[in-house]
Length: 205
Image (cartoon, rainbow, N blue to C red; front, top):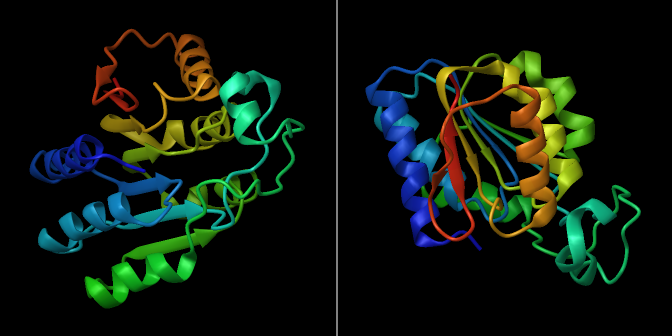
């Protein structure tokens, strides 16, 4: 569940991106029930719907973790740690619920909101050219392999000054390891800003 601080952070960064005219789409990988997606999409609507919102999720739950994800993940997955793209029935969000929130309750337009169902490993490389430049990339992927897949595929599309939000950095060992490894490989020297006990964000140089 995304707490109040992370919802507010999503709103604040979306507004900053609009106010500072940071070019690119708002992208969320790991949508769950659509709360943060709704915030980003509503901000875009408020400012004239001049950018796209891309939402990626399996809508089947989380895949199996691997041993890189640590004891907490192993316990959640009931010892299933082969890393297969098979749902473990944890954190399941349903596509129809997200569509109802966005398009019926909030009456947002499908013209600028793109929902892509499937595992990140199958969808991100296929869609990244369609996404184009990215102003905000929000990761709620929990595990090492999923987090690393997002960064490997989409980080280079984030514009200078764009924001990266990592929902599970403080909650799951594998997520933190994937982010730290990736940033070290990119010689990132910026600051990671803490949102709450779990979430962080940073700005691309």
